[in-house]
Image 1 (cartoon, rainbow, N blue to C red):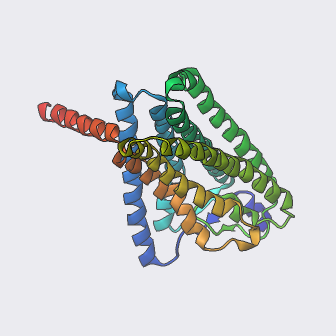
Image 2 (cartoon, rainbow, N blue to C red):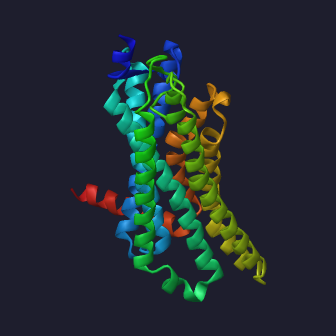
Image 3 (cartoon, rainbow, N blue to C red):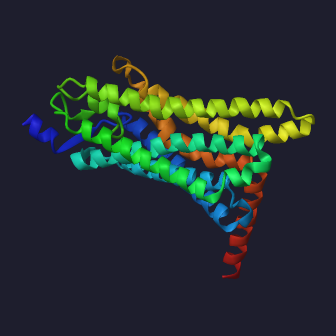
Length: 312
């Protein structure tokens, strides 16, 4: 009966069983999610309506905002419902879909952050050839390759994971269907799954992170050669936002997917909250605060919308 039940649905344990804490979590996560929706939609709209922002940098930034919107929306609404609901079950197909989309979006963000580092490298280290290097076809091809690679990666993981028999328990000690807690439910040897997970994480996260590191070594070397302090400050300011986002995202992803299975603990939930809810909320804020073009465009957009509403 347990095997049959496990084949149909799982029970997401969530963040806490304490009713008082559940209310606090619900309100906090709801506010974070609303800010995420507002911030990313505003950033996408501003980039689309301002011709000055139709550059490779903002093309990748718009893709990042789309990913953040979809990433949060694939997980947070379910978390909000389950936080105050007695029935926290999720169907087998729903669990597989949630895992698939979270893996696709997470892997795409890994690739995209590496592409944004390369874009900054081309802009700072090869300024005279920037437009020819980062042309429209190349940017579109790189973005499509990132999405395609992420889909292939997610498909492999989902197929391998849901071929396992989940006979130890049907209670997932997490707030969404993530690979590590699901592997712990299987009574079958999961070493192949873990090996594929580590290899995949190494290829996606470590290789992309190395590309970012190499790009910034070249960027810093070039910036230090600039004679004027104002020029160095301006060059550094274009990179600090991206470095902040990279640190937040890669730090939490590597913590979850590059540790041995025996070290998984309750802290994984808090870390997962960072990259599923906090980082998508902070990304548009970080880029807006550090970027004068985005800030001025947002102000003009808000004033334009306010004038339109007043006229109506």
